[in-house]
Image (cartoon, rainbow, N blue to C red; front, side, top):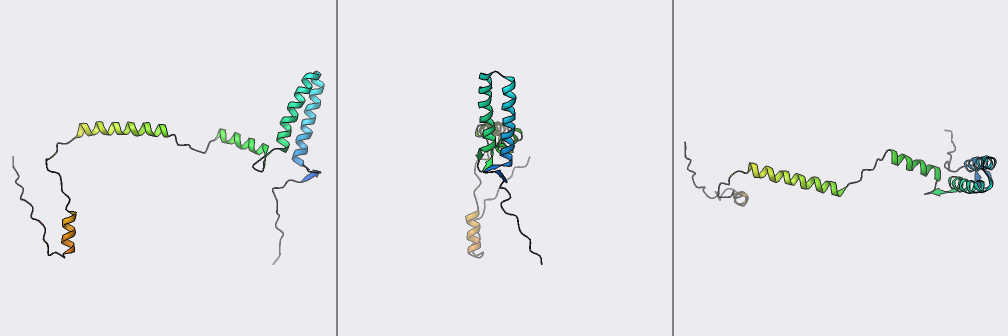
Length: 152
């Protein structure tokens, strides 16, 4: 069976001039080109101001890293997040307002549909049934009072 070498460190950029990578060299080259164009177009004070601004912007894009990733990838991720947010943040105030509105509606429905109470509350027979099961049927339970129904 053949053995193949597995490439490692695939995220490391190639260095071309000392510690400068190809991407950094191209960014510095484009900054130099824009500075040369601004030298021809502007007077000296505006040229110096524009040059400082361009050096700062292109320097950040060439050399700054955020969380170990190049700055231009950070900017692209920020733009993508602003355009298509995938994170849904829970707004507590909205949920509380909806919950309060729902409770108000339920109270109104209960007021309109409230049935008159029959007087005596329903008693749970769980304890009695448990006693019947525990005594294996020896205890028969309490006899219920016979209901008298009035027919109309």
